Image (tube, rainbow over the protein chains, first blue to last red):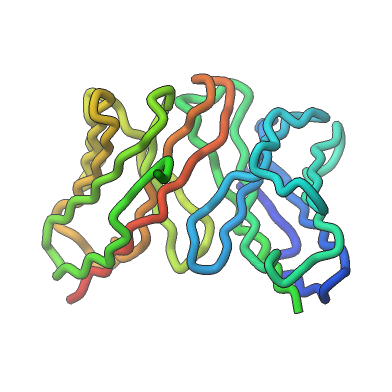
Length: 115
Length: 113
């Protein structure tokens, strides 16, 4: 049973470009979460999605960031017009429909560097 | 006040030592509690869930005190491989229905030979 998959693992963008980060949850998992870890900081929640629905986006920056989890295919975190402050590790996590006490399983992350 | 607070450390201990990590959380509606470990800023990995009755997994013991909103992790007979950052994590979602995880800053542990 493959774990949570994320790609690319490393992404370099110049200021003003777009970044697209992809996440495939574990088989059988229908809940996807995105977290961001800035350099020297802890992980911060960004958004929680179920298939075709955004459940909680309270951690998403108001502008330039969007996320989706379509019926078919991976979840996508999209950052438009990237700035240097977007450089971070972006982790995706998933959990099953009927989870235990709420544990989530993390992918290896995408490390975004904005030049 | 941070939602989840931990002593950032670092904790430098010799092999075989017992080390304790403490954590407090501010949201009394928190539903579930975990310790994760993170190695070299790779992905966090679940170490154990934490229950009010306390739970043990080999050398690791976790405790939860809901009244004082306090969580602890005890590592006995520490190994070199225990060196990592330990993350105190709280889920304020509805039990069994998902929810966001709130992470502490992490406590760095370094176990020396």
